[in-house]
Image 1: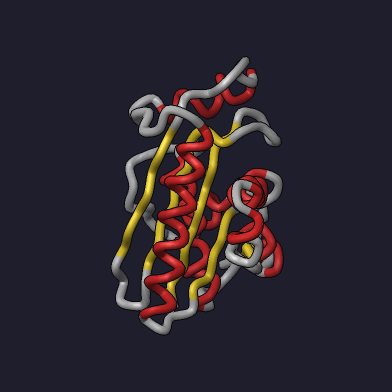
Image 2: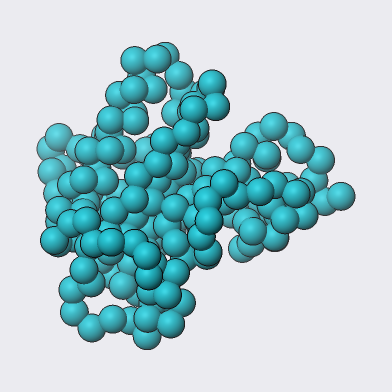
Length: 184
C-alpha cells in the first residue's frame, strides 16, 4: 500500500492554489516528496498574508503561473498513480480538512482537461479530519494527535508549509491505519 498525502495553500479558502506539497510513502518505507509554488495573482487574502506566507519564506517560486503549477502537480500525481499501479500497490490519497482546498485543487486539475482527466483524480480523497473524528480525536489538529503519540515529523517546517502539512497528514494516517492506541 502507498499513501499519498497532499496539501495546498490557496489565496483564501476558495482562491487559486499557489503552493502545493505532496508526500508519498510506499510499502517498503520509501519516501518521495513534491513541492512547487507560483506567484499569487491579485490581492493577497489577509489571513494568507498573516498565517501562510511566513511559513513559505524559504520556498522558491518554481512556476510562473497557477496553470503551470497545476500542470506540474498533476503530472507528479499521475506519475505516482502509475507507479503504484505498476507495482500492484493500492494507493490511498489523503489530505487534512480536504474540502474546500485540496478537493478544489483536484477539481481545477480535472477541469483543465475534463475529457482525459474526468476519472483520474483520487476517488475517494480520504479526509484525515474524518479519520481523527472516528478515532475519538480532535479532527482539527493533526499536530496535537502526533505530539500526544510522540510521532516526529521528518520535515523541518511549520503549519501552513505544504510539505509539513502533507507529512503530518501522512503520519497521522499511518498511525490510525496501524491501530495505534488512541486517546491514551
